[in-house]
Image (cartoon, rainbow, N blue to C red; front, side, top):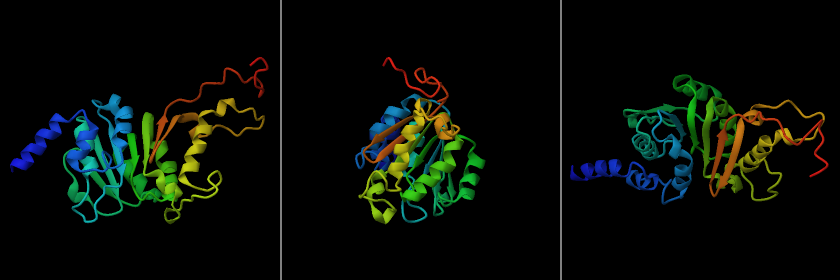
Length: 242
């Protein structure tokens, strides 16, 4: 009982530190991978907002195992609603402000069921299967349900280089991997600067990706309004006096 009481004190005392909360709850996002420093940088402005956060992948092997990072998010966002999605039934881990769905992250119907219940989301974290095709497909399906100003995180991107997960360490510029998929999202940010006369109509990524950040093992995508026209391109031609 004393141990449980001490943990509750720590959860309150460390409410501003994702690093410490990760260790208290036992998630590897902290000292294991070092992701919490990146999360803290991007998520600090959201701390006291009534956000909706979805994390794909609840963790643990048995039905009563896992949920460490969901509890970390709950403590860090005191007014947030935290959602989880897992391939296995983890509903026994639910508690106030934490709701868990069961489903396959690559299944459009499962994701529609989740977002139908949650509504549009402020933060989405993919810590699921880590399979390249799943990561890409999940992003394609969920990015439209991310609110303007929202953040999308993809964890453990090292699997982009591992064949067992559909990745490749060869031909890095051409391999159909998650890393190459997100590298091309940087081009979406700059679509107004293209000088192609027959450029395709802007898609959702062109119009709404305003930032892509790469860290070791972690990618962060910012959603916003990217409709501002180029100040340099005129009639598909770059300036001559630059």
